[in-house]
Image (cartoon, rainbow, N blue to C red; front, top):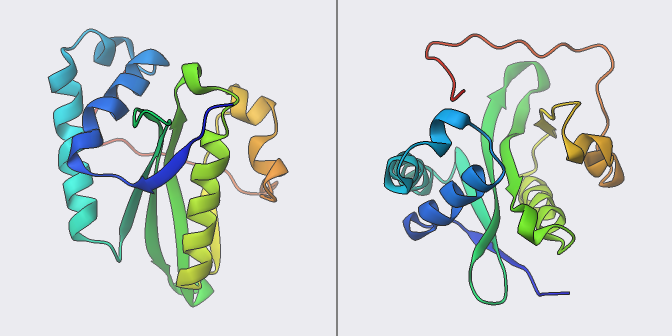
Length: 162
């Protein structure tokens, strides 16, 4: 098994992250664009998160050759009802070519460790019920609990990548 390391994302990781999204086929529209058009907004988001470390953290998982094989983004949100913060994991993607290397596990463990250091009340993630990670019970195996009484609603201001 190849060694996977996790570190904070830098602007130089944007293209590797964009390649993962293209590799998994996240969006037909995105896949038709040149890689620079996909990676440029990712680079901007990394730089924004890097400038607001209290509010956002982005990690990448890299193989032994330094290639980005996975990434995650977490947002540290004040939650008045809890009287504390919640960490919201908005992205966790792993290249299919890195499947079984432990990249996803190492990424979510990095988020869990940071949440513990920050003394947040809880972490939250949305996972599609048709996604392989859900079907494999990825989050359950890491100790996460599926909320039985909460619906996840979305309101779009812009058309999502489709």
